[in-house]
Length: 95
Ligand SMILES: [Zn+2]
Image (cartoon, rainbow, N blue to C red; front, side, top):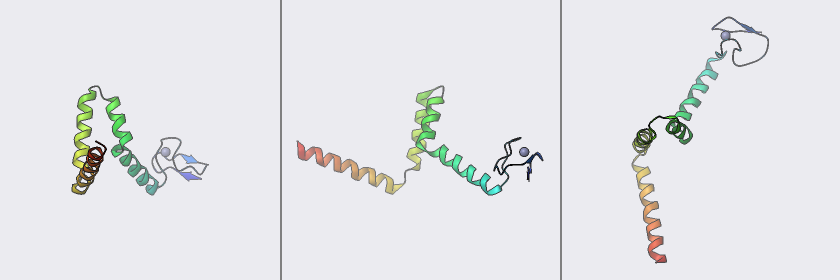
């Protein structure tokens, strides 16, 4: 029997979450859950969801694109540059 630290509900099962108020019994699980939701926020799916749910889709897309651009470091831009040059080089050979 676990007692909820938030509401005091006594849970007979071995759940990680209180069925009464939804708070976690373990601080570690809570921390993991927080990290996962943070990852979700920064994932492509999270961005896509925010754009889809936004009233002004164009503005939301611009905002997310700015965030993505800000997140790409020097090495990231170099990789993009190399890929771009490689593709260009392939096209030049074919033509
Ligand atoms: Zn509770």
